[in-house]
Image (cartoon, rainbow, N blue to C red):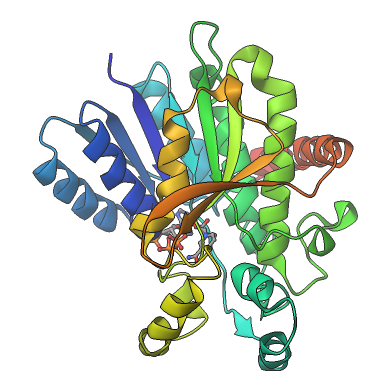
Length: 331
Ligand SMILES: NC(=O)c1ccc[n+]([C@@H]2O[C@H](COP(=O)([O-])OP(=O)(O)OC[C@H]3O[C@@H](n4cnc5c(N)ncnc54)[C@H](OP(=O)(O)O)[C@@H]3O)[C@@H](O)[C@H]2O)c1
């Protein structure tokens, strides 16, 4: 039986690069592209099949920022598949990012310059908004829509014979100080992206605690800083091009500048090959690229505690109950 890999946000960036790289390694896979834009997804499907005719590639339409869409997509997946071996929870947004120029210049002259540029710590704020579901857009897209998706897909993910895997695209920008249990959607702050990525790290830990005995394992990765549609919101493409020579130089000191989605996919592909039982649930796997352009995977112990992880998980379950009641009422 072919292994089935579901990838959200497979229409561009690191999600698309991941699909290509996985099929280069194993063209017997069934890769299911979970994308909001069917036109883009069909174009990707055509290109993947043209280079890997033995593979199976399918599309499921899902907007992870709409709970109706997530529930419909999950229903469709349950009809199509008996099990999912890997789910890459990768779709993500950073809307209207603003670069803090003052922090940028003070960062340039600080002793933590490499750290600041590798993690964008304190450099970026975003403007969030409320979605049709009444949730914060960054929270719903980056974490909550995915959470509902995996809750719905539990029957395809929990099996006693062999484990299934969840692999979340988090970030080095996930910071404890930007996340608050009493404001998990980050309604009151200015760094919803960092908060949502920290929430992903916590959730992954809680999922391992609650689901490992049922054969489901979760991991988090950071793909590094890449030039993708997401980062072109921070600086326009021409500025990235101008900065590239400097960034290449910085790469001799800071391995987080993976720059291309293909490099950024390194940790996502590496995890595909690992036995989940051998992985530490408190570790984040980071794609890294050397100054000479070689890719490798490095690790970081996540800055979190398991009680907070469990509390976030319980809060998400509570929020899920509330939104399901609202969805029922509006039917
Ligand atoms: N770029 C970086 O430096 C960097 C660093 C650390 C982490 N990451 C993370 O990497 C992941 C992929 O980002 P990327 O850099 O590859 O950017 P990207 O090229 O913009 O890819 C984002 C993907 O997410 C999809 N998406 C966005 N909102 C969605 C929604 N509501 N429903 C379904 N799909 C949605 C996009 O679909 P459309 O094509 O329809 O827009 C696209 O396929 C994100 O989680 C991001 O936070 C990126």
